[in-house]
Length: 245
Ligand code: ZN
Image (cartoon, rainbow, N blue to C red; front, side, top):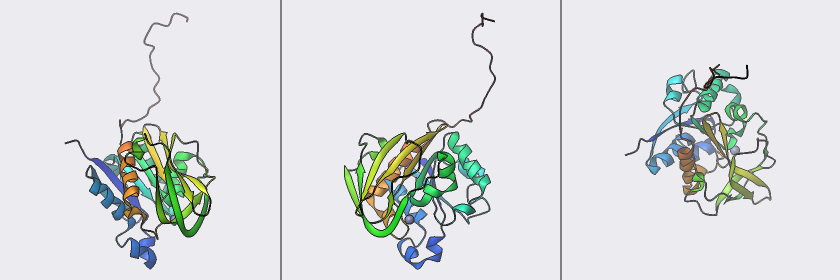
């Protein structure tokens, strides 16, 4: 049997503790529900980390060295993530670790760092319907997904999404209120692959949805490292004799 893909699900884990409405949907934290979806797929090993887990937000050098794909959910405490941990995560992505950023993670330090843009967008909390269109059906992240599927209640994230031009736009969302959004986009940075996926507001049971779970599992398979290697900047000897000296 092939080796399992080692996923670390990182959650800010503040809303579920402070807000009853969120706790009712995700009593043990939304990271555990994301993890359950991956475990049900069968080819993942899952561990959890969160902001207050320890002094390093659960993201020690050892944890990241043993992580193939890091999933990131944050919202109200992006500013509390230490810059030295962001530096460390960035280094691991550049060396091959995969990163999946979910929903309000668009404003996380690590996503903004990897994009180099503001990552701003329009938003509205009106519990409206969302229709997600699979626009690249041949993409590995779209495997097994229908041409379109719906979430009955969602938070609207609208264009313009201030990101660099993605490598692939896999999903585009239409919202009941009229906006559209590039809701599933890929990037490559160094040897690492990055996927941003918009659905996942904390008061809606979105991470229990089978289509959403399929997207996250597909993305984790796609983002798993192909190589894991330090990027250096060496001065080198010529392979052939240079005669034009
Ligand atoms: Zn939200």
